[in-house]
Amino acid sequence: MQYRSLGNSGLKVSALGLGTNSFGGRADEATSTRILHQAIESGITFIDTANIYTNTESERIIGAALEGRRHEVVLATKAGLVRGEGPNQRGSSRYHLQMELENSLRRLRTDYVDLYQIHTFDPETPLEETLRALDDMVRSGKVRYIGASNYAAWELVKALGISENKGLNRFVSTQVSYSLADRTPEIELVPACLDQGVGIIPYFPLAGGILTGKYTSTEKAPEGSRVEKEPRFTRFLNEDKIAFGQRVNGLAQELGHSASAISLAWLMHQPVVSSVIVGASRVEQLVDNALSTSIKLDEAALAQLDQLSEPYRRGEPFAVYRLS
Image (cartoon, rainbow, N blue to C red):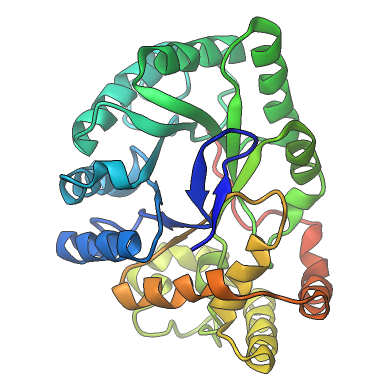
């Protein structure tokens, strides 16, 4: 396993991270626990969750599964998306963040999180309020590092400017949809992060499974696929993306690897990427994805993948989560 700095911080994270939004949903508790333990045994240290995943079940399952092993992982969670119908059950106000952090710590059975991330930009809360609340959390010892998620480049840079001006802890990372099928972050966010020393943590690195090459039609979902288990995920599928997944799969076969491993390896070759989070609903998926960390793509292979995916540098992002 490779280990990298999270942005320009001193924190080291595994190049491949474990996303856990399937825990308690597409993967039951017993399976989720096996996946988490296998990840640790594989050298994966970065574990990413959120307070909204499977209605808080993901955090609860992780907390139980990490009993006695908390020290072996870099544990990240998030807050900011909608948790209920009340006016203060969403966003990144001090009120909401402090309440959600305490609830997450309780579910995770820990007294600190290594990385606390704002799940999306909140246009109704002053950034300084959010950043001062996060700074207080770091100073209290309940949070070690802070990160953003689903921030536009200008929103991220504005936050960094406020932190610098006010002497507050700054974001060391940001999560965004980034893959061969979604290179839109390269237009503004990637240059900003490289300039400011912020690490990118891609989510949907396999475009929801499209980059595994297993989807051949919008009509029929492969057995055991995400679309089969979560029919609402079909909104991400179209003929163009499926055809692209097949082209990536063909190139991957020429290179002697699986499409998913090649797609993850391509991301790991991007200098701005700190850790690539990929989910799993079966242990076998995790084992296959872990192979990506040993793949060294030469300049010719990288050029082929860049050329193949060039159309996805512009246009609409594959996914983005915002407060309405």
